[in-house]
Image (cartoon, rainbow, N blue to C red):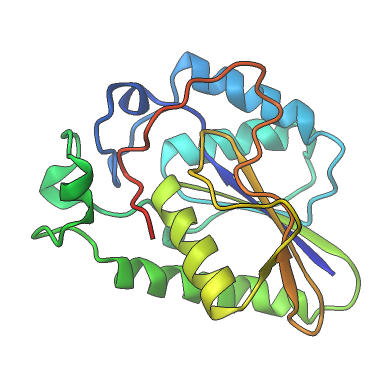
Length: 211
């Protein structure tokens, strides 16, 4: 059985101001680092075989803070886990309609899907077929994880939803947890679980699109 924990990075100043980050290398802010510390404390007893992360600093720092309790766990950067590229629009404020439109120079949802599926096929699938229980963390971004969850896990791989689990916007440092067995039968056990945060603001993610 493979346990897969999908984690969105901690808060940044762009999250607060509603500007599109895309693949700009925007760091965590102080609140984001606190969120990551709370997340790390929650996951300190987890036994990870590996933690994969986007190479952008906001995700890598999130993963590194989680990994402080897992010094022997490999922390692996993978550029396929980067956020959606918004090209010339990165750093700007876009309306919901603009984020859903096909803007020139903006990475398509199809291209994101291809990245996500390649990661699943190369990294996740071999672990599923490996004997024994495995657990990996994947630290990435709101839009990328939304495509991964909705289009790869649910639509392509036919994962099911556990009782009471419903689609949700991915908040900073939230965990979406899935399990999958050797027969490729997968199930989402949680979606955007942020129980480790005592207080958080509900902020619209400027990079995410509804799928």
